[in-house]
Length: 306
Image 1: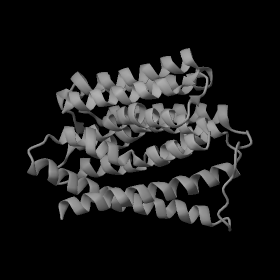
Image 2: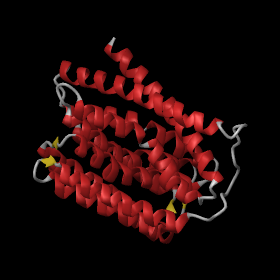
Image 3: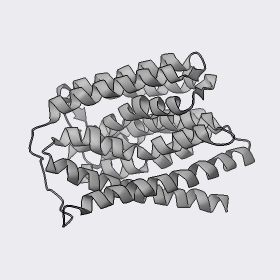
Image 4: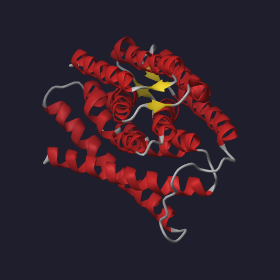
């Protein structure tokens, strides 16, 4: 029954994420936002909603599951870059000059450094949460100043009456809440039954599961040659994971952090983030060979923590 709940939670999460992204993207187009801005904010943040709900519910669970709350975010950022961008680049080269992403990549690297420092003392406090949310506000402000006022590129999906995208967005949020609850409860039970660390469960199964909306969005965008949305989705999602999800979760309840996060896993987050920035500037995007390299690195990471 526990495994059925876990699978059901994943299915509901993916469906909810799809509804949320399609509805929110349609609304964003109506306000003439650039594709990169849509990817960085509406799509990136929308596909991160599962991580937000999972981390908050894990922190508030009885007993709390802080390993899942933090591991979910860190593992999602690693899988977003190494797994999702790797697969997307293999499907179609993601050509987007680093100069178009420098500001956003800088925010992602700053968020990574801030979280790493906060994890060193073994807890993400409410004050840390306020600092992280201030970083999110700064990112949103600069992103909208730089990316608003541009007509959308590519085909525009229509959903009939103007109210339909709003209904889809609301239905997606409801699906994410229900799916996240199933996922957290079942994943915690599985971890304890098998004596597996909650941190490892959060870093792998839950992280990849809550990243499925990002995977679907970036892969579809790669197929359609919308590389700005594909890459922007991941960069925006990673920024929101660190600034927004851990910030909100820490405000709700301070999060104890296992030493392994700062000592081991943040090295992988930083390495993946810096590697993405370097490749974007040097190669002007992610060619297929870079995608293969990212997937190979993710395989090494899984073997390492396994």
